[in-house]
Length: 100
Image 1: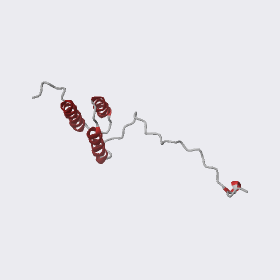
Image 2: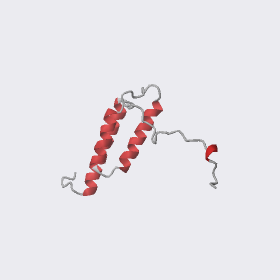
Image 3: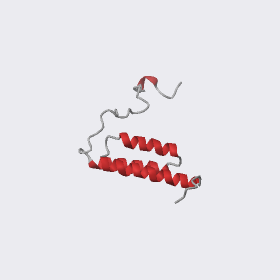
Image 4: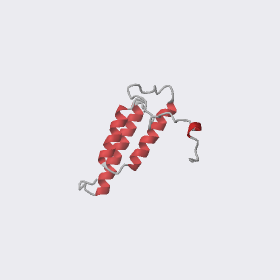
């Protein structure tokens, strides 16, 4: 006989395998939670840190540009960081003969 009594086992409700992300149409208001924007910046910096190709940097920059959490200054800082990272990647490849 089976060790588990089937009648006593609760049927598991079918849960979504992944929680749905919040809709990008309604970005949170940065005034509500200034630490949220700071967390975003940290996250983008972490992503940039890990980025090792230009395509990935482009993707991060695109995210930064359409991010509703960051204010203009933070956005500018992040885009600058993207540009710096691009330069670093190009330099690491040694493909740039126009080194300054």
